Length: 93
Image (cartoon, rainbow, N blue to C red):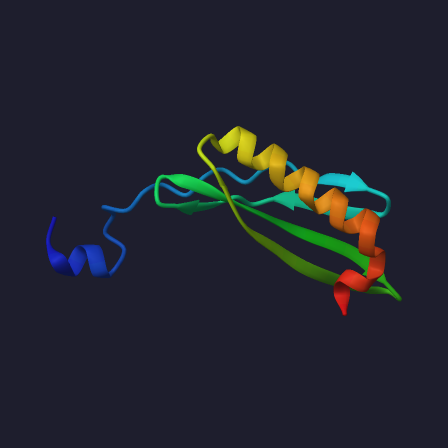
C-alpha cells in the first residue's frame, strides 16, 4: 500500500473495536471504551447523565492496561461504577 493511501485513510490500520453496550447505573449511562495501548487495552469509559435538563459527559481514562478486550470492558465498567458511587454528579465539575 502506498504512503499516500495510508495517510488519507486507505486502510492499513487496525479495525476499530465494536462499541460496547451502554449500561444504566444509578441514573448514569456507562459505555466502556477501552483504548488500544501497545497490544493491550487501557481502561476507559464514557459516563453520561442528565443534569438540570442537560446531558453531561465525563471521559474516564485510567493508566491500567489489560490484555483481553472483554476483560478490559468489564474492568472499565467496574471502575466507572466505582467513580459514580464515590463522586456522583460531582464527576461533571
